[in-house]
Structure formats: structure tokens, C-alpha cells
Length: 258
Image (cartoon, rainbow, N blue to C red; front, side, top):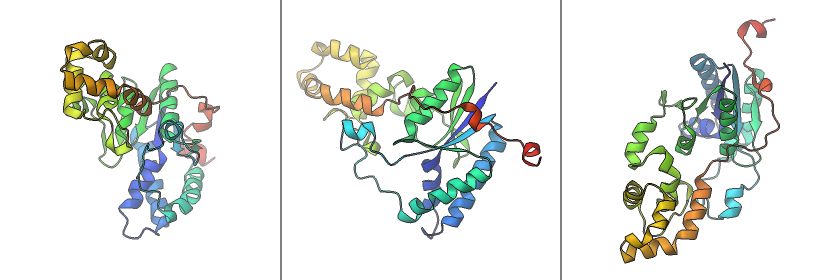
């Protein structure tokens, strides 16, 4: 069975860079990134591995909602300048990279979905909770910094909703980390309560006459923004990538030495 290790490149290197005392010490970032990648290969024993990097083009999410991720700190200049060298070091270690056109998230989701549709397994290395929406029996999320798998059950308890309701939850309550707006006046507790009662966003709007006038009006006024928020949070799992899994086959030590 094919097992694909998918590393969220910027998620990894930005966190490695953030804890260093000297932001100009890109040599240490390169060394630690390479060590992390090698550790991941040993731990998970994938048949294939790929590091996916965010691209520079404006994402479709930003075009849909210009305030998406507004205020997020830009990548530190020294790190941005050193990325090419980090990618080169990974390549020399036979760990291949793929540059997304804009955001890496949709590429990662597509790769994970594609391999599971072909009876394989995917391990996504990231601390981004947005990937929780695609976890299934053959897709897991690994937090390299905590050295543990993402606990979907615990996350469901935290939000007080089920996995199938996560996008509806964000449509209602928003996602402050990504500046996804949600509906004004609907917070996480209200969103969870509504979804526990009505099960889905669609059912909620069909049953709007059963709500109090004040809450119903919030939902009516915010319907368009809920729709936008849902789209912003939803991962695209079938993007055309024009890459072949064979390109990312893990080379064994014996093959490297021949």
C-alpha cells in the first residue's frame, strides 16, 4: 500500500524559525528542517514524501474575501530569502518539494484525497486545524512539534460539534485566526448550540421560524456572509496538479549508495 507523507512546508519552517534567538540564522533553520524531515521519514516510513510550499500568487480566497488572513504577519525577510537554500538542501537529501500557485492547503488536501481514493494512506504534517475536515480512516494529521497525531475526538469536544459540522460551525462563528467573518453576533457557543439542535446550516435556515426574532434576524442578515465563510474554510480536494506520485517516491539508503 502506498503511504504518502505530506509536509506543510511553511508551517514547519516558520515555527522552526520563530523559536530561534537570531532571525538571521537561516543556516540553523535549514539544518533543523532537514533533521525534522529525516525524522519524519524514519518515524512514519512512507513510500512517498513531498513538501508542499505556499506560492506567491493571490489566492482565490483573498479574491473572494479581501480581508481573508488580514493582519497576519508576513514571512520574515531573512527566512523568505533563505527558502530556496532550504528547498535545495531537502532536494539533495532526496526529499522533493512542490510549489503551490498560492496557498498550500488545497494542494495538500488534494494530494491526501487522491491517494486515499487510490487505496493509499496519507500523513499530513502540520499544526493547521483546518485539515481536520478531511481526516478519515486513511488520512491523519501529525504535529511534529508535539510528536503526536491530531486528536479529532478532542477537537470535536472542544468545539462541541461533530467533524461533519465543522464547516457549518465556521460559517456561523467564523475563524478569527484566518479572519473568516462568520455571522455577526453569533459566537462559538451559539453556533454549537444551533448545530446541536438543527444538525446542519441548511436545516437551520429551513427552521428559522422556530428561532427567537433577534437570533433569526442575525441569521437572515448574515446569510450571505455565512455562505462566503463556508467557502473560505472549505478545502479544495480535487485541484488539477499535473504531478505524478512516482516523482515523490522515497529513496532507500541502499539506493542512495548505489
